[in-house]
Length: 168
Image: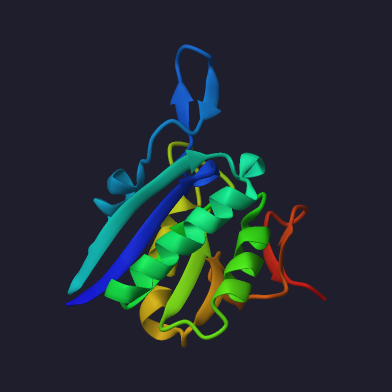
């Protein structure tokens, strides 16, 4: 049985519609709904609901909390997946690459350009790819989205293409 720690932090991937305000907001994790859609043979996913924040509002203290949760996850799992907002995923990834220069497993950051609750969302695809990547990538810190695994440092969001790329 392969064990993966999945840390949720919020971001677009987990935004839900608030009927009172009419806005998409980070209110609670929806990762369990996504996981129920997946068939994960011989895989145990341990979910850690760390925070529910738009990444634009993340602080250095939030990134320190993510690093601490990643450290705990690596102690008990084959690897760690962090659900994260795409706006500052590159900043958190760079921080984790600095904090874990030689991690004991793969640390994967992923998110979505469209919330799970919206049509044409990339949320389930990116989550599936991230969970798969834990078992096939060598130890390191990666951004896994849209069929690619990009190793930190040097990963940036390409806002025009709505994906991540390696810095040219």
